[in-house]
Amino acid sequence: MTIEDWRAEINAIDSELLRRLNKRARLAVKVGEKKKAVGLSVCDPLREREVIERASMANAGPLDERAVVKIFRRIIFESKRIEAQTMGLASTQAENPTR
Image 1 (cartoon, rainbow, N blue to C red):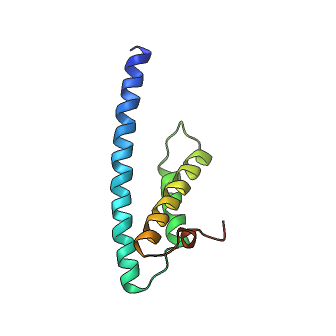
Image 2 (image 1 turned 180 degrees about the vertical axis):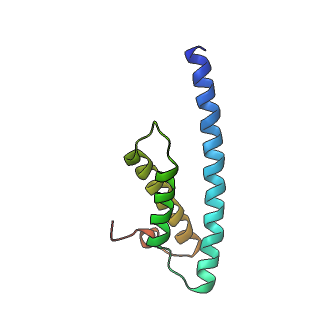
C-alpha cells in the first residue's frame, strides 16, 4: 500500500468516527432530557469512571492508557456540555469540580 492509500483509509475512519461521535451526542441529548425530567444532575462521576475504565480495559493499543483516558475524558466533557445545554443550564455546570 502507498501512503495515499493509508491516508484514504484514515480519512474513511475519521468520517466514521465523526458519524459515531455525533450519534453519541444525540444520545446525550436524550439523556439530558431524561435527567431534566427526573431532576438529576448533569454530573455522574461513577458513570464517568465506568466509561473510562471500560475503554481502558478494551484498549488493545497502540494507543496507551493515558491517551485513551484523555480522549474519553474529552468525549465525556462534550457529552456533559450537550446535556447541560439540553437541560437549559450553563455549560460550566457540566464541569466536574473534582477534576
